Image (cartoon, rainbow, N blue to C red; front, side, top):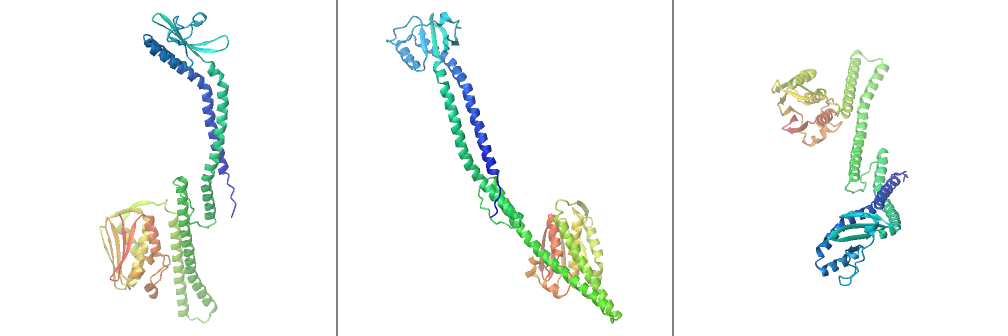
Length: 441
């Protein structure tokens, strides 16, 4: 199996780890920068609430003692008036020297730095004409700051390591399907079509796999049809070329041919040349259809006018077989589609109707806003061959036995043009009458 150079996996893994690293680093840096400020901000909001609660409990010694027990666990020191004993033996603490050493703002939380480098949050207010000082040392937060940074760094590396493992796993799982798509694309490029990629994910990659499978199937069908078409076209061209070559050699080498025989050979030469020219023209039309999907020129034109022009073109066949053509429909009716392609459709259908009709018969062409119907009497009942009449180089056996000239491409061209113009069509044969319907709406 061909080894494919596939670097997308490495790129995806590096990108994943890089994004994880940046994300974790941003989170950790924000934590280090904002943790101290956020803690102080919260405590500044909390200390006035504690003071308010103490003020409410000053008349109830038991509840006050219980509340002091609760807040002592948070490291908050309370100094209220001259009380340093009492409250059931609870050590409330003596009033410190903050009032003497610092200019504290009344009813405001202040951040005080001591001479020893410590920091305290202090809230100062009066309750019942007695000073209340709430003090929260920030020494603990400073002491653990180094450990916090260390833990943050360790956590960041652990997160990156886990991201590396998970990124490698998911990247490999993702790129495994991409590698399958890459292998399939190389095979299709070498005309080795794949049937199933075995990718069943319900995401964009799964949709891409389904599209490649469908494309491979359609390309396989198209290539098979193309090979068959080229083979048949080569065979069809080979016959008139061989006939022309044989007649030309006979005319060159046989000096004893009388004037009548020479005329017959010349007539055969012209006939074969015309047939080969018709076949080449139809092959060129088919080639034009394949690249004209996005180059259609829609225009409005009179329907009866294009029918009459086509009948005039094949008037000789009409006269030779003494065929009447009856046209019924609104003479002013116009349709809007690609004129040149629709003209080719009408030429093929009317030519076929004239060629394959019995002598002294009538061809009916009816049209209205919804449809065009061509009706002519044919030789035999062709119900068994209806679906095959649209195949390239396919002709009904009864027509071949009657030795009617034709390439077998007429209805194949009609089918492809009508599908190009988004016009529906239908063939029906009833009581030896051949019906071809084109639905305009």
